Length: 192
Image 1 (cartoon, rainbow, N blue to C red):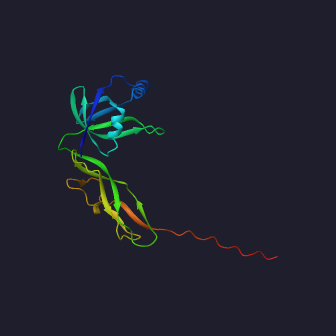
Image 2 (cartoon, rainbow, N blue to C red):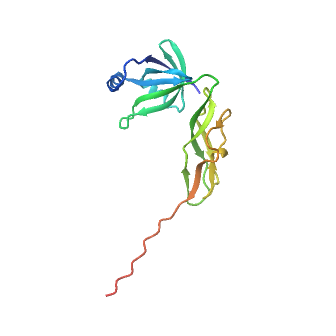
Image 3 (cartoon, rainbow, N blue to C red):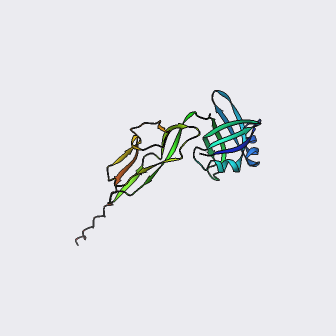
């Protein structure tokens, strides 16, 4: 996974008014925390951060007033209408350190013939991986599965260096049979 470099400045103003002024200047307020250090309130360039967050679990190299920090996004708040980023929480990590992150689950293959439906019980898996080698996703084959079959978290092959951090018996995908809609019964003609 590539590391994306961003420049940040320390934030000294707090509250709604200060946050609005920050966003009008095309900056995003955020906070960096972790490793027992005091949280650092920062402003990040809005467009560059938006581009960086297009990659899930992106590794960001921050330069905060001359100091370097390696972070991953922990929480991102977006505007419900416009979709722009309003605030971001970043977690400090170290090279070689193991972190728990959620990765996307993708499927490949065709189900067994018939009217079956694939149901995603979970869209993501909680895994533990090295901070500099976080996988983007896992791919699961559903080829030949039939109604009633399910795939558990422990059945999904994980990339090298990753281990399952969540419940290994949790159902991730299941195949259900499609239920045909019953045709309405025809009414008998009324006797005169």
